[in-house]
Image (cartoon, rainbow, N blue to C red; front, side, top):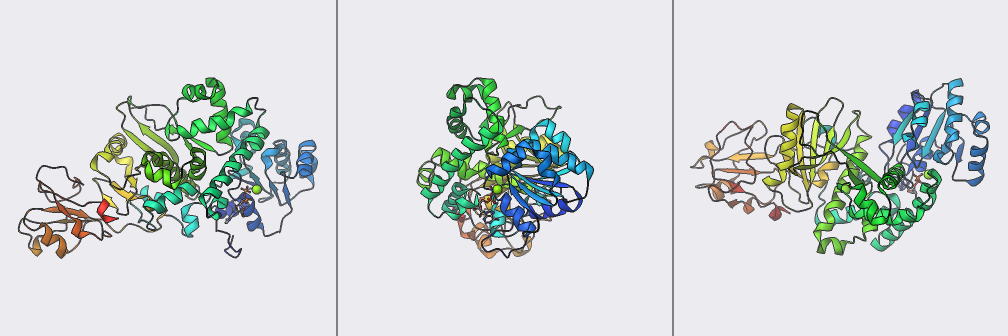
Length: 506
Ligand SMILES: Nc1ncnc2c1ncn2[C@@H]1O[C@H](COP(=O)(O)OP(=O)(O)O)[C@@H](O)[C@H]1O
Ligand SMILES: [Mg+2]
């Protein structure tokens, strides 16, 4: 796909579709309704292929009545919304078995019917699946992100843009659907989101299964929204709606199939006995979640506790989007042990490298925010590459061995962080005594720090980007340091620390 179509944002998944079409008979783009599947498919093909959509009643009827007949006359075609006639996939399989040329079918589907074992087995080896989610911040900016790739190699990407406070709230409440991004007014966005959800429930959910209690689904979504990012208690959720445990599980499965929610499994290690084994539930788009919760900028600003789960959803969807662009295949889970230590997201690649991400909706971070990440680091040992607390501030700071606090916008950063710098001063603060303390920490002495810290404070950690050296405050001996890292440092640290006020850096 090129950039010529006006107003069309380049999709990074396009490359995966193009390369799959070159060596696989069928490629299926799956993802939620309105995320941009048809636009992507049509952009890629530029009108060179016949285009059929099962959203069209007559076409759908033909596909349902005589799937073999429909496929017989087709070659190098785009077929949109194939979940509406699952039998068509069987016919496509037969057609592929007779003619295995690559690139014969480009399909799209707004429901993950491939979770149905029969379908996924029959198409194994014949069809490649590309998941397309709503637009990511990286796509909106037009630059491929380097966050996950670098994190899995133990490095932190640099924040892509300054997005904190009200800007971050706006991005989270808007989410990634193009139609939401196009609407300037928040009330218009939530009107769109509400009618979108209604359409999904009444049409797609209904099309997938004969669901006998369809009118329970909107209420179920409401309850789920209030449990978003929490450990899933199926009985409790079902109880609030009037559904039994089994039906609740089945309905959640359907909502997952239509890409409204995502179940995040617990991280598991059979050598550790104190892990909690309950999944968490997330919405897949923070804009939709915000609409269901009735979260507005005013409400979120007045009550930050509403913002936490929304920000977590936003972070999860940004991570999920990047999964699709990595060569590596990664899994997403959450960590929780019986002592209530938690890590919101654990990412593991095929080689077993582990990255932990915690989300904090506040503008400051302290050492205690790394408790869960440190547990995860202990549990995974050398596999642990990086632990990051993403927060609503614009400063990246190291917080110990392989641990960082970083702005949420690091997630879509496309460059590496220049090393956070650490300055150490000898008691007399002479120039020569400012030492390069770790391979990551090189710098001559900054005069402001020297003056500020000369006699008493011996140690300060600042980010390259921090504009507020003047915010350096003295800490009394024995008080907790903002960043008691130094495990990689070669000097012995004095016990008097200087703290940077993160809030002051905004
Ligand atoms: N890459 C894109 N850039 C900008 N807008 C897009 C893009 N992809 C889709 N849209 C817009 O989003 C809406 C839904 O797109 P569509 O391709 O029909 O989604 P789907 O086929 O997944 O339901 C349309 O209004 C479309 O113009
Ligand atoms: Mg479509």
